[in-house]
Amino acid sequence: GRHPSRCSCSLPLSPFFLYYIPQLAKFSPDLWAVSLCTVDGQRHTVGDTKVPFCLQSCVKPLKYAIAVHDHGTEYVHRFIGKEPSGLRFNKLFLDEDDKPHNPMVNAGAIVCTSLIKQGASNAEKFDYVMNFLNKMAGNEYVGFSNATFQSERESGDRNFAIGYYLKEKKCFPEGTDMTSILDFYFQLCSIEVTCESASVMAATLANGGFCPITGERVLSPEAVRDTLSLMHSCGMYDFSGQFAFHVGLPAKSGVAGGILLVVPNVMGIMCWSPPLDKLGNSVRGIQFCTDLVSLFNFHNYDNLRHFAKKHDPRREGGDQRFTFGPMDYESLQQELALKDSLWKKVVPTDCHEDSSTTVVYRMESVGERN
Image (cartoon, rainbow, N blue to C red; front, side):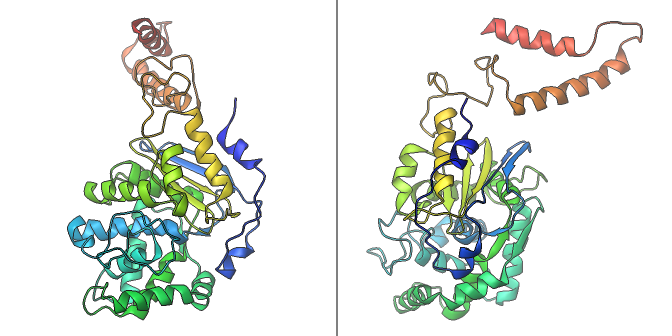
């Protein structure tokens, strides 16, 4: 059958390369990677999953989650709205209350940056966010590209214009140094991850704020819920409405070619491919997400019981008992190993029945009940 990562890999690429940050243009257009991490810590990776790349706008939901975790929803949204803007992500435009429309556009993300560790130095703020992201990634790779940071700052006239516009409209908390905040904003965009480490970050969001690798609570349930809500409505630039309609999952894209995708209560995915479409989204990444929900009933409004054409890898009940994938096989192997060790402790050595019989009987009985 079709496999989402293979279908997306063979996709003809459009001619758009929206690299307004020169450093990003250096990546090969042939790079393509997908990593997933389930909420119980199972992993699967395909392609160039160990190559570091910058989060860029994929950091926006993460820093918004940190701000809500620290200050609560009500405080954060005194400064930032919750509505899709209907405009390009880097437009100089505010809502009717003179607030940025949402934290996923540049204006909202710059204001959101000003809410993190107010009063601290940029060095302290950067360490604070890096510590959070390391926890979200289960202490897997999180780095920093100084070259991208310098490139961002040198080519960031539009963001400086937005910063001065926000300052004029008094959008920042009192006492904010706007130019210092812009430096911090560029630094956060230049944080590096791999597909593997970022998939754990996405899985932490899928898992209600608990990192599935370490078991540590990193974010409050409120922060996770609000972040996923805004990713769903505003996360994919001017493609957000179409993405919500066709894919129906919270996601955030970035101009480095990453798409952070969350299947709530199931898994987190990071896909990465540098070639972008005219809206700034990864061409292969969008196709992968579309293929994924065409095969599995992950769309937010797919009916889990009656959508017979799609697979349900959650395996609840016996509906999928004849369809075994890698995740099912791995969990079955683990169960067999555990039962085998227990079996040897309680069953006489001359007994010829083996531990796997129990699992087979259990699976057959599930099939009979359904």
